[in-house]
Picture 1 (tube, one colour):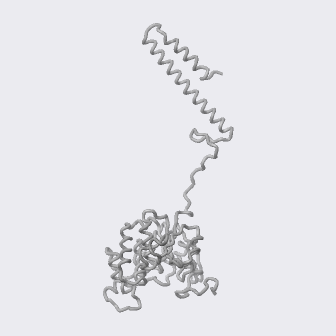
Picture 2 (cartoon, rainbow, N blue to C red):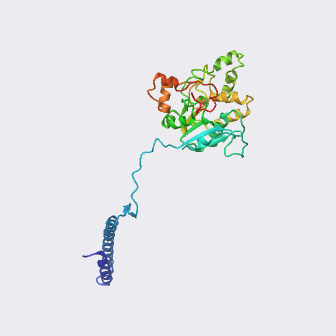
Picture 3 (cartoon, rainbow, N blue to C red):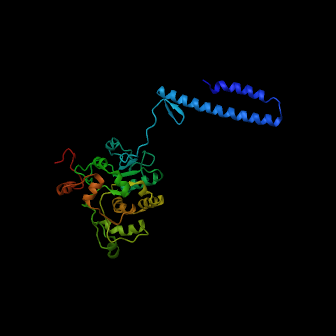
Length: 342
């Protein structure tokens, strides 16, 4: 069988003979160019034949050829659609130095545990000053992580079992595990409470309190809120009514956080650090401001049945189930909860 390997030496010898002077220099050069072009074409064709032979040989031996490269593994599978059930996510927990946080560390979520009563530099994560309860932790995280936020962030208090957690066990783990992250991305801001008990449909009357200045010593948040609202939201009119589920536990999408510049969160934290209000009152002012900070109207009380379905997947609840999803047990759960639940 004829091959380029047999032909090349012969053609080169013929080329040397043909380059000897015969008729004219011009004719010799033209002939030489033609011969060189023929050699180039023949060698190129041989390379193609050799490449195809190598590819066939590699496949017969069980190798894989991808983009002309022989590999010893299986070809990469076609890229799959991004999973909507394993997005980038993080927890932010407002804790104290004495808080037992092993419950959160055992979860599959990356967790940021802020020890609010520890001096800066004395803990992995802490705050500039322990003031405003969980609000200082949340704002510090938003400032520190503004340029590296996860897809979804969930903000919680440090204890696992809390009287305001919206499930029959009052269990933070249940709320986290059942949370619909797709809905968080869609809504931007999601209060983890669906029940209207405490906070909805209206908790505060800022505009009336601003006009009438009623004496209400038992509700310092209501009396202080109008003036603080004007500081926090200088471009917004003081609302007639403010309503939203208590108690400063919510989830945010990255896109919603970035709707505000970092300087806004720095300004809110500066207000919290400088205000003469006590921690309880200043924290509650922000408790009833988070939904407005993150793009919701002053009165933000979605239908509980709809929210249980969208947030936690608890759809088609009976009236009995709806009424018993969260029950008032006071501001403190019974000692030994949940083992002591009746």
